[in-house]
Length: 585
Image (cartoon, rainbow, N blue to C red; front, side, top):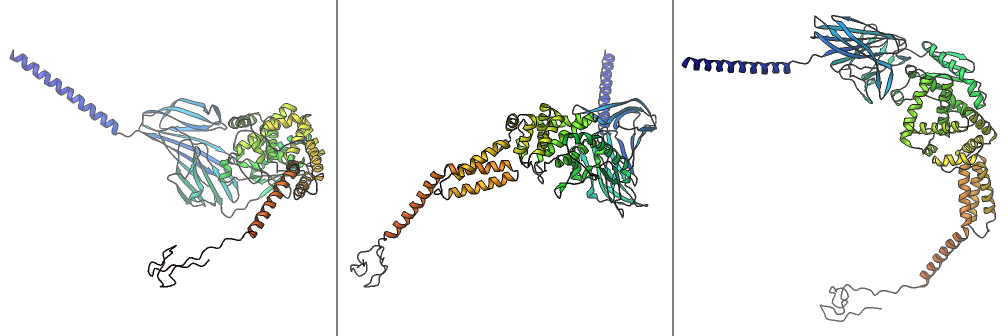
């Protein structure tokens, strides 16, 4: 019996020790697992730029300490790339499309893979080259990196090797993450023999590196390329880009000339290197209006890197500004210029086959339009030299006006009628004249006016109606009695201002002055009665004040005339000598 008890006791003790040992071991294992750092890989982007901006790109991805693993990285879909791997074998390699905000990314794909390595080490290198990827307009250069995006367990860094004779300052190196622009961490700038500069910095997934640099002792040397009436000025390295735009312009010119009915003798075009604000704001191009006519068409060369057809739509947009001006509409009516530039760039672009770019741009505009409703009258205040904070809404609203009219009244044929009407009008300087011409081209001025009033336009009327209103206002002012001065004179001055504005083509302004003159003339009798009555009241009141003498006040004695003691205010007897105080009336 005792033996059995002892055996059972020993068994319980051994079991307890084993359980305790397993528990302690498990705790130690958990602590060891928790303490061990997670294996992180490293990824290095290297950009090697030559003197013309041709850029060789290599991406080195390294993992160490893993027998097996998986990862991913974005790679270009628009050109060929290759990879080599050492220290491991890849399997489950997949290259798939990336969708952002419900749309397929046109430039980048996801390269996903698994790997196995007996040496616990993998080095994967992806390589590709892009001609003229970095833009150089001596002495200035702009590097804007490829899309940098990779798995979350990778620690990223980038190295940019600038062309010979380059200089750069830390303030001109930025990392763009989403919509944020900031200085990259771990930034190092090193100059190497051969006048080359290495920029090294940390990266973040879903980012780009932007660098502005200068080329010491280099000057811009532009060549001229001519095709038809178009001349393109550009550095020789961009000759193929220039010829691409010249070819576009010559293909589109017959369409423009047919619709606008103008005679174009020479148009000069050039590229420009965008500043940081111009690049990030999305400025695609511009046409300065100097000396009373449109200047050189400037195209943002960065858009050569965007989706197919983007630079072409921008070029057509800027060419439309020339056409609108030569057709007789100045840039003071900016909603007309920009609305037509948007409309014709897309309509002509569609005819020429740039369907993807047109569809993308239309979708972008429609998204903006959903945020502003159907009231577009705010574009009337749009003027040169002022950039509204929500300028994209002004472009979208202006485009919608001309898109709606074009769809309703016949597209190119409708606008051909419109520009013929413009030629027959004396002036196209304000909204009333432009809307009248749009109505005449549509065959119904009243309906078009109502359409614009529905969009929220104000101060507009048909030019014919304004002319009749002017005649009526003039007669009303002339028939006003001469005795109703100075209001007849004021009405005459306003009427002369109205006639002057009308003669210069400012019809809406003329109508405003004429209506003001009529209002004063119609109310002149009442205004005279009120004015003359008020003057009479002032005269009578002034005369009354002069005729009535003010009542004299009694002098106030401060001291007793008998004893010299100080008197209380209003005292009848002196409190010191008792004598009665005699006040003089």
